[in-house]
Structures are given as C-alpha cells and as structure tokens.
Length: 128
Image 1 (spheres, rainbow, N blue to C red):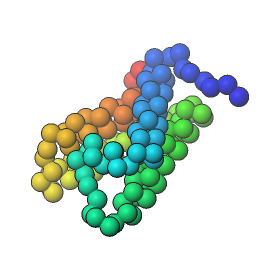
Image 2 (image 1 turned 180 degrees about the vertical axis):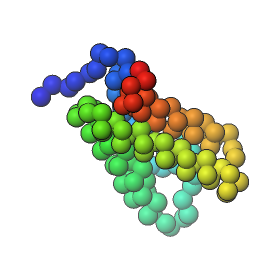
Image 3 (image 1 turned 30 degrees about the vertical axis):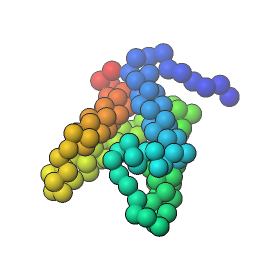
Image 4 (image 1 turned 120 degrees about the vertical axis):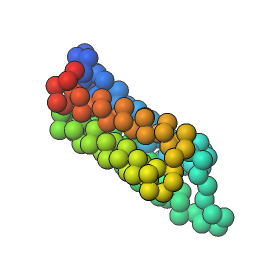
C-alpha cells in the first residue's frame, strides 16, 4: 500500500490539515507536560490523571483521526476532521465569551483551529 499524497490543491490543503492534526496529536501523546506548559496550563501536584487525559483525548484521538484522513484520503473523513476542528473552535469561542478566557493565547489557538477546520471543509464542499 502506497501513501497517497494529493496533487490537487484543495485536497493537498486538506491533507496538510490532517498532517498538522497528527503532529499535534503526537506532541500531546509523547510530551504532555511540555504541551501543557506551551498552552499555559498546569496540573495539580500529586494528580497524574491529567497526563492520561492529555495522552488519550488530546493525543490519541486527534492522531487517529488525522491518520485516518491521511491513509483513507476520502472526503467524508476530511468532513469529520473539519467538523471536529470547527466545533473545537466554537467551544473555544464559547469559553472566551462565557468564562472570561479572552487571552492572546486563546485567540491564537482559535485561529489555528479555524484554519484547520476551513482547509478540509473547503475541499469537501468544493471551494478549492
């Protein structure tokens, strides 16, 4: 089985979104402490469950979804990837409004999430 690297612009941009998702997932899977520090988060002393959460939910799940998009290269998988990032961006915006989380870091992450949502969704809906 060969790795399919798209040549069409829209599909290639969606592919790049999947690759970025995998990179973020790998980062959380293998370096959760560093990932938390980069996001400005910390764990309570003696509470190691946060690392399990980071490795599974923030690491394994995006890595699996990104790999599925890369390996399968199907529009419906790109739709799932884009929808997931769109809802993640919505959740971050909701937190910024209701939880007084209006920080520069949150704005940066919401922009990243929006870009990672737009790229695969634009491909699926024929914009690119």
